[in-house]
Image (cartoon, rainbow, N blue to C red; front, top):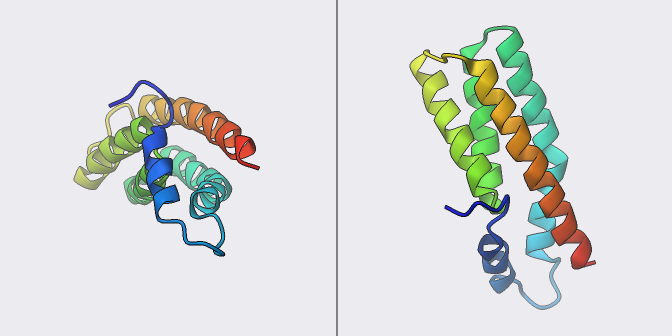
Length: 120
């Protein structure tokens, strides 16, 4: 796993699927992630405050899959770990995990915005 916030080979793979005359698949995927992730992060934080393991599980699942789609592999892995923990009903020190996810998201968000802007 790379130490970079984004594995650009994932985005390059999306670009390989690009068809002439169609909207840019990689840019569209990145924009959808940037638009939808804040709600999932809010749900994650709400789940922590309300001690709602199911909401934590759902939000971490959404973040895990959507972050993987844009190459945010470290964020995705951390969300997958939290999802597994929440599914088992045992989320020890969930706040610490969520803070790590927020940090990883911040780095991924910045890297994706820079990537997106470089292709404008």
